[in-house]
Structure formats: structure tokens, C-alpha cells
Image (tube, rainbow, N blue to C red; front, side, top):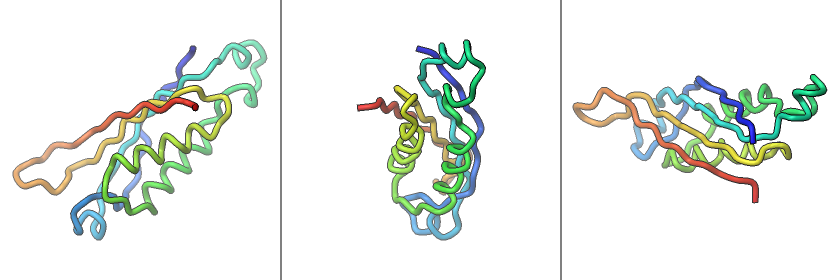
Length: 119
């Protein structure tokens, strides 16, 4: 199988366990690895024979901006569900980064990675 990497999907959102995270918000970044057979698209040069990621990028940004989940695990799972709506996608790996979570004396970021397959 082939892979499409989509990196740097950024949006400001309100997912987090602490009350201030759901009120003040923070930046999130999503990187995707999408597993899809690109043989037909490579031969035909036709968009409808590949995974059209443009609408999913916008949907992921909207999800981050509007959702208020307690856990980033839930947000990542919802991102994966958006990508798996495409019948061409066999698998997606989501890397979700929460930038500067409100942890005392911690100036880094937290990234989780999940992989979901078409059932």
C-alpha cells in the first residue's frame, strides 16, 4: 500500500481535562499518514481516483476549533474517523500535538499517535 503524509494541520481548540483548557484553549497540530492504493490515480491522473485530502483538512480544523473533549485521545479518534470516511482509505495514523499544555514548570508539548483501520 501507498502512503500520503499530510503534516502541519493547525488550529486553536478547547480540548483538555483542565477547566482552563476548555475556556482559554490552546494550539493543536495534526499530522496524518494515510494508507491508500494510489495505483489507479498514478495511471489516470484523475483526482476522483485518489484520496482528496483538501476537504478533510478543513473538517479537521473545524473539529479542533469547535469540539470540547476532555481527552486528546477522543479528539485524535474523531480526526481518524473523518479520514476513514473516504472509501479509498485503508488506514490512517494520526499524530496529535497539544502545544504548551498547562503543566507547571513544563514548556514542551505532548504528542499522541493512534492508528485506525477500516473495519
